[in-house]
Image 1: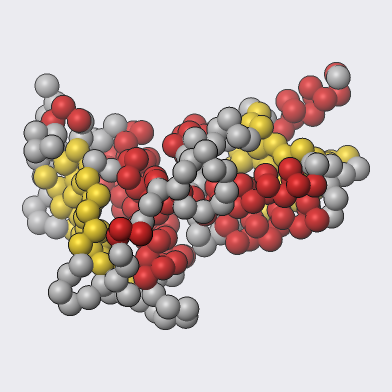
Image 2: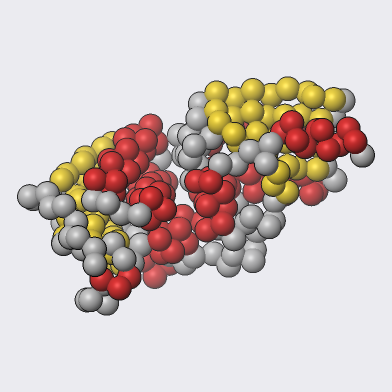
Length: 114
Length: 149
């Protein structure tokens, strides 16, 4: 599992995940993701483009992120989920709970125009 | 009219340690078997998830902290179904306590059982006389062909 964290703009973080997210790798994701909310991030984007598979432990980590974002008034976005990953969110009835966008670049292009 | 699943003579057994690092191997076997048996792609992916969740639950709950255990998965190909027995040798758990969580309640955890029950056509927890838990999972290739239901 490869995890990259980049501050795209001040307070705007992109967490890029590459690899399968399961019980063996979700603790690493948790460790990279959750402190961002404690560091007063304004917007955290998780790029799932490189994630071919996610299970309930990965989903639970993202739900934790969502809860922390709400508590701290930050925005939390999931980008680039492929069909297989999206199907798991669907099965969990969580697709509408998260802000999900097709890709990171599109998200920031959209913001540039606004 | 669908052709019968391609038979494999005799059960296929996979025995792994209760180490999260072995989950990928379990997923590989379920994926390749479901493809070989011509399950629709989505069913195959969902079965991979269900079996992963069953093993994750065992690693989390069946064995004590630091206790090394085993999970034995037995795959049996039936004419129109794949049966997967997931056996552990840990502390037996009361299946009555396994409840899918209220999905309106957005919180981490509790999704595994929901996934297993949503995906598989049959989910039975049994208590073998020699201890542990036997989870019997069955996926029929299509609901119409589930004549035993």
